[in-house]
Image 1 (cartoon, rainbow, N blue to C red):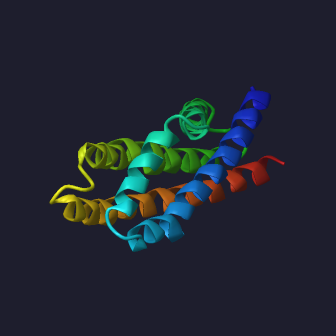
Image 2 (tube, one colour; image 1 turned 90 degrees about the horizontal axis):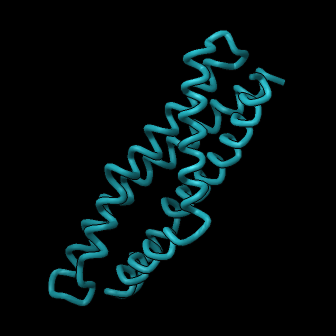
Length: 161
């Protein structure tokens, strides 16, 4: 069982770090860059990003890391005396709720609304402005959740070494 926990913990930690980097990139400069492009180019670019990302290596990492975090939550609840269980549990819960749940409840619906909008239509600028504000705010939450989760998971790995 310890080997399974170690493997899941390492995979989750590395994939959480990757996801933290992806979300940080969007929060730090991608969305600002898209906003600085003359309308409607930023909105069209984001629509393209949203279409491409679901056909990229992002999606398998997104789902696999989420499933691994759920598996770690279950293992830590059933094996609370496992070394590093508290850090593993906190990191996995924070990741699942702050990344996976936020993405499904907030960012994906916003992406779907953006995809349905006409960037060159009369309300394109208003739709883009609202999207940019809301989506970026939720992305900041994902960035913070992933980064916090990464810290907890590193503490768990440290406790287990």
